[in-house]
Image 1 (spheres, rainbow over the protein chains, first blue to last red):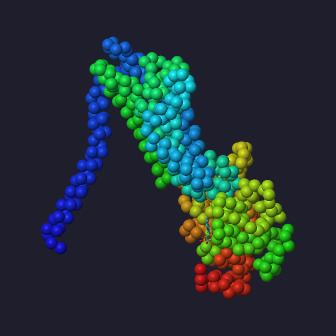
Image 2: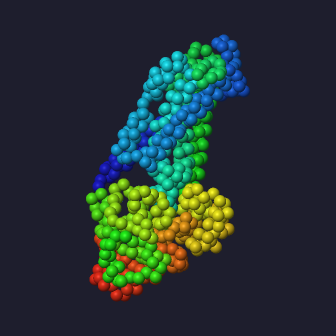
Image 3: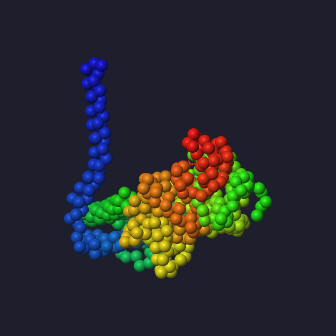
Length: 283
Length: 269
Ligand SMILES: Nc1ncnc2c1ncn2[C@@H]1O[C@H](COP(=O)(O)OP(=O)(O)OP(=O)(O)O)[C@@H](O)[C@H]1O
Ligand SMILES: [Mg+2]
């Protein structure tokens, strides 16, 4: 082996290492930039009014987005009520019941649904619900987000249930415990933290969705008094403010984006907390 | 009862002092196209320990699981033949597997206490999930079952601690207590001590000898000394067939089949 050959090899090694390092930095960079920008531009607009006041009309100073913050929570609550039971039970079916052929098709469909562009969901619910109800509504907004959650929750639920060792199912059945009780009291209980984690991650995914809400929840500068009225949501208001020509609104959009990011971050930290606890229990 | 002759028992002329708990006649089990248990006919003595021995893959676990219909959890498994538990056909129409399993309990090779439950909750889980609510009765059953499983003295001060905080041997005795708590008539054990150290194994063996006062026990083991020490009857399986069945002393000192002799003396398997 010659010296030059050795050097060439060393160079290739160093080159690859540098290249992968640069790419790794490029992955993290957007997050850092987004965070820096949001804090820089949005933090000044964050004040008590932001969390307590309704949006002001154009030209007037001040105002907040309390209705949009509340709206996002109401939409997420509806989405959870609608999407979590169906998603979790679907995941339980895939993992604990069902034939392998049918399951293959359900999984295939769920994976495709997980890849459907979110605006498509908005159009679908627009046709199914908004048109028959003669207008956008909080209900339609909640349902579209819930529908997006179903395949996500279903797949994660199935995955964590599959992680429960078969020995627990056998032990329970050998005690003469019926299958459904074994499923609920032994299998689901063992995997509960994983299921909750999956639900929270799905919630944080749909929390920032804007496109499907344009057709369904529509947005509202004031309060929605009924679920059949259009409702404000943070992503919608951020979008509307951001494309407006007013500096005041731009600042509000930054602040809203910052709060939304914090919400998603809080959910993710909560998930980390839950999973950390789970591993501790396993050890 | 069907009048099929039973070559195994007929050959040994067995007369069980406490009667017969289980009778299997022409028991075959298929996994898909594979016939892994071939027309096994055997009687299991009540209030005694019956050991099942044989080389790996000969169908010991399959036989055991047919006795409480656990094999039905596997959709590929198919069973033929007749099994009676104290005279009741456990495969008769309308007999729920759930009921059979309450009468014929099972302990597995790998201890598997439920990780989300405390020691006490693990013991009572079979009762609670079948509707028993009476706190006093549950407390009685906890002590009684743990006593029988020789675990009470070690855990009585921490019944509410997580079951997975116990040692491996303690976890296996907890699983035995859990199976005993539903008061089965027969206890099936599939290599219950093979994952344990010698001391923990010794405890399980002592416990088995103790339990036969009240229970019928069928135990699968690869440990010849264990079978010789703790069982009253021994059945030798080979390639899915029951080769020889008789009193343990006879199987180990004076077997009538060459293959049995080769196996118990360690010449193959
Ligand atoms: N779920 C299954 N599907 C298909 N074949 C199986 C299944 N379980 C067992 N078998 C086959 O049945 C035969 C008997 O298996 P079994 O587990 O009863 O053997 P065993 O005597 O308990 O062996 P070991 O001593 O290794 O536990 C083996 O040939 C095995 O490959
Ligand atoms: Mg086995």
